[in-house]
Image 1 (cartoon, rainbow over the protein chains, first blue to last red):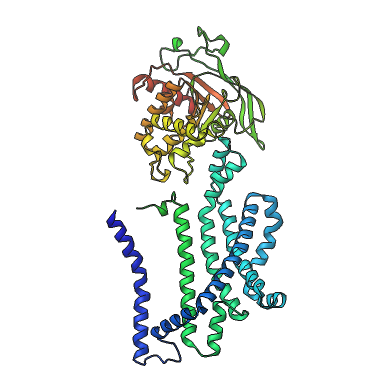
Image 2 (tube, chains in turn orange, blue; image 1 turned 120 degrees about the vertical axis):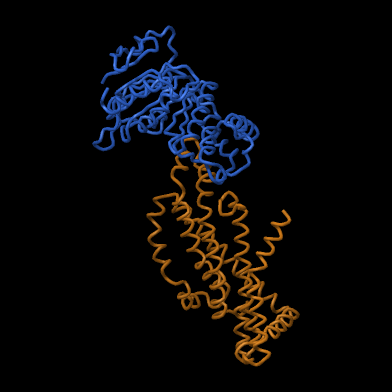
Length: 260
Length: 273
């Protein structure tokens, strides 16, 4: 048992070896003048910027604002996508009515709507929420629909034979069967969530991480720009880790998540 | 169509001897068991293809009937009609017994069809949907798992079980609510030869304990003769042979008597009878 725990820890640690080595090489290259300060700030300067912005409270505030926007947009778009995925997976009528329209809208890159969104909402919160919601809608919708359509019809027949009600059939057979695909959609949507938010904040915002990075660019604070980019990476990784944890908790039955 | 029923006491002396033709009412059985199932003129068509063509069949309560035939002869369709999964194009199916729970039928498929996301115990409890819940359901499912020798696996996921074990869980699920009729659609077809014999013995033992009426569809003549009281051969949608298997249980694989009966069925299947 202890040995397994150490192994897991060692394996988690292994993933961080490469980033750590890259940072060391980068610092060394900056110190020796191989990389000019005006191209990229050394890690030590980025660290100093982190401490400075943490002390002033500016960083925490911007991360808080961005996270709130990301999660609200995700909740709105994700729940609408999930609802449409369920409806269209379970009802032929609903699918016939809406799927064609949704597939057409899906093929418009949602970031292409930025000019229109700015015209509609200005640079207020609604603009960011709208874009994030639109961005996460499709991966959740498509994968929920695929998941439900992919549920083994033999299991559904078995449930019917054993007298399951529609409700029991949904909760005991269809939803658990669709869950692996829904998680694929969830992880994909989390990536799109950060991407959309950052683009939106970079173009049209007066607060948040993207705005902080754009402000820093205006004042040539390259250390703050780099810090923002690193924070995006960490936030993205955090969101993905949370999704994977959820996946591990709910898909224990799946051979892929069982200890070998 | 000819219905040939061979009564245990009237076996022909040698292979191919003329069989006595009997209708069920003429059967010289002293006290015939009440009928569990009665089929009259069951016909099933898919488009213009006739799969079953006027099947008449009476199955007494507690009998173990094997239905055998070449692929596409309509035997699985017959089973689905017996189990209430499909309705016949014409004809009547009468199921004896009082209320709905006394007439309960269960079907077991070639695939175990276990829910991969439910532990073994929970999978067996699916068999009690709408019948029992909670603590009661858990106790009943543990009892039946004990019967099939998997009580210690109740908390495991189906993916860790072997094919034979999964099929034992499926059997437990089918039997946990004590069905009146158990329909088996080649449930052992995908198992290896040794596991199959083990499963046949298990099935026979549980059938003897629970006294349900069993209808087994199979393409394995040896299996039919090993398990059934009666073998019905279906050919081109009709009953081609209705043969009693009067051998004492437990039966031994490969005895002379089983070989003779197997030969008789095979001859009929290949039109040499």
